[in-house]
Image (cartoon, rainbow, N blue to C red; front, side):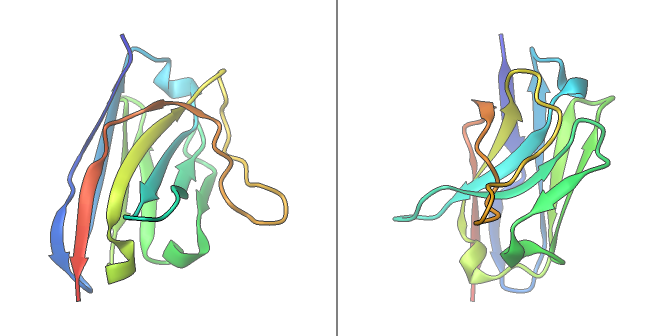
Length: 132
């Protein structure tokens, strides 16, 4: 049984930090790209960050570059999203996702630069609220 479980959300003030964690079971974690998506109320889901199976390649959406850091520990089947200098616009539900079909790398949509949604397994999400 596949399980994708996030933790670490919460309420913080602008400028503060949070770290999200995501642990996966039931999948060949070491061979899969992993990602974080988010969805704010009334808005479409958007890819935030992605990390390749080895951790050597990463993707960030422009609005979080320099503030968020994605990492993974393949020995623990876990990925992390360190979020620093949080802004009110970061307020959203954050979802962890595991790639399907043995996809090892993250890919972006040509033209828009948005993260391609090639992820088959999703967590329930954690809420991040950033107050101004």
